[in-house]
Length: 473
Image 1: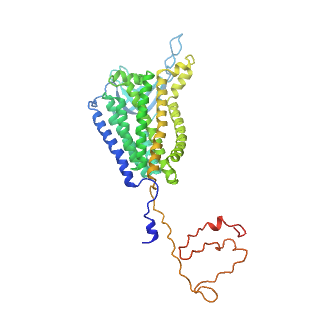
Image 2 (image 1 turned 135 degrees about the vertical axis):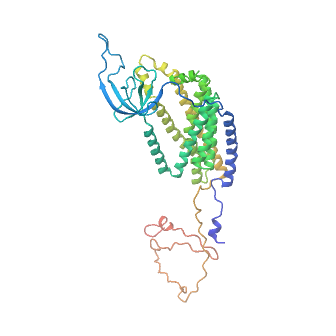
Image 3 (image 1 turned 90 degrees about the vertical axis):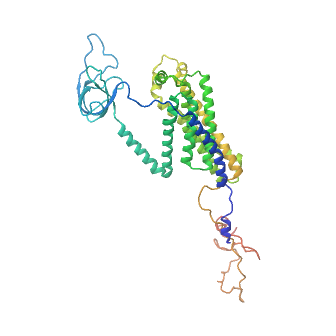
């Protein structure tokens, strides 16, 4: 057997061997998957309302043909125009394309009031059919935007596939799984009266187990990220329950939650608030845990001599920088979504700032962001410690790529027959070497093979790093 072939099969330090990695992954994955599946079966909604005819006004689709403007009626003498009163009146001619009266051409009033849309010829609009209205039975309420959204979705998918290729395809598949769990399990189960917090934890576990392995593959890096995410989600859920109870938050802080509590009285609104915190944290948690797990793996691969302490310290420094940027991202996301509310509070100069911050709506968002951030912070040491412990005990083996062959040790050359001049038969005579030493770049410093032993491997860098410019050492 050649020396190269023998060295190519030698074990190398690094990541756990594939067999050990599979055993450890399955030891965590199988119980977590079974527990999640059983919990989903027990919590699965059974009394969800079947879709039926919609109550209230009926939606109709149409295309604007023409808009005829007209001055609005003047207010009575001595009165001012009320705030928010329409300033542009007239009629809109619409061809109905779908719904009640499809194929007909009707006239309706120009949309008016706060938030009213502006329409022009050629716009596709949504109308309400008001059967009981004595004057006009149709009223424009919105633009049709399904075509634009489908086009944007197609561009998004193509961009992901063009950049991520197969990894991008798996990311899109994971996104589909996320929407499926949200729309088919989490939302119906909460409407069915199940505990929102328990449903959110089980649904988040199902999303995480499926999406992480689907996106990042079945590897030890993913398994450690799964373990860290599960632990951090549990801590986040516990902290959110403690914080909302201590702050006496009911989960009803705006018109939407108030309307939901009236129409869906069986929904636990505080539990719904906790569920929102857990699900919102999952999206950033998996980013942090996967990053920390992969960081430890790469550090251990680049520095096989690193033990647990060095791996943990180095990866934690990276994690601190990552968490700092993530916290800023979370704050900016909340600020962008709540910008109208921030403007409203800024305009309300009569209310003290302390009273504004302790109002239910603001306090709820503060608790949501604080608890979510604490959960992210705990994810860094937990995931890093798990990854460093495993890497230090088992070593790291490169993920992929051929094993570079180890150069074979050259066999000793047989002694050459020499003539009377001392030159070996068949050899070229060596040029004479000046007494001052070999010229720069010459091989005069090449090591001489030991008698009866293997010649040491020549280092090509010796001619560049050890030699003096004038040829001396």
